[in-house]
Length: 383
Image 1: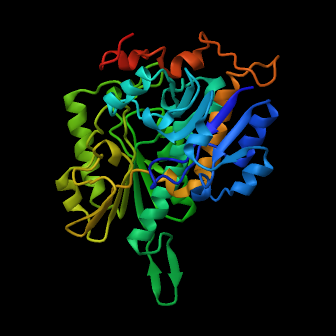
Image 2 (image 1 turned 180 degrees about the vertical axis):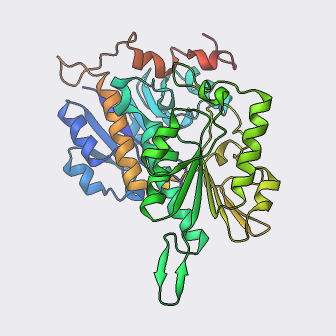
Image 3 (image 1 turned 135 degrees about the vertical axis):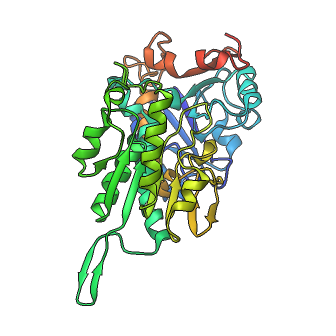
């Protein structure tokens, strides 16, 4: 029988958990022994009683939870030392943050842990239910608008009153991925006037389908700025200059800006310069969803709200985690769909990993003591 262990997160500021009562019940139904550390679900409003009712064993501490575990599920990357007691070659699946703390990653590999990074999930149709980045970014996009509205301190929709008209808040979304689209939808539902920009021409239709206005220099170069695979092409210096001038002018009239440009493994691109921040009206708000990688805004500080000459810049790095109940439920479903691939459908409760499966190969980071993922082997790992 496969034992699945879910210890409490080591980072006490992380309120998400890698298991929900719903997915615990599903794993038990597949013949697995599921263990969860007592109190691990408290931050997501999942009680120990709910896990017990789902068929899981609630263990008093991490050591008891991990003892002999075949599969370990966490939100954040644990240390190698914290996984002592798990079975040899135990599988770890988590939001690995694979490009940071190389030494910590190598320590996990050397400890014999088989490591999977959920961020590396291939963007293919059959893996959509396992796409952690999308499930969490969706919530982050929503929360960015809610936090911005609270910080802004004014009404978002236009209001007609006997005492006069309250103008609608102007919100500009920079980057139209999953987070950006949800931010647009949320801002529109709250009655704001919404504009958005992205370097990919195909996003214009998505923006307009949500009744927002697309902002970009739409010349011939822009129309050819996307590869067949949907990735942005490098633009000419001339185009970049024209686009920067357009965005710089547009920023001046915005009340709230939400930036979402984040490239895995690289510093976040700067979209808003200090000069652009200073061109905004006092009381304006910027929410920088790329704060964990240095930020899209020149004055962003991670996990801090900066007041720069009257403009407040929010650098929260875990907005999805602030909606821990929803975020944990979605993340747990992502993990269930992924781990179910590794379980023998003919023999209940047995492990049967197909190492040639594209989903398995795409997310596998470390195996048999070595870092094996192509995106990491050139950064200190050995294939």
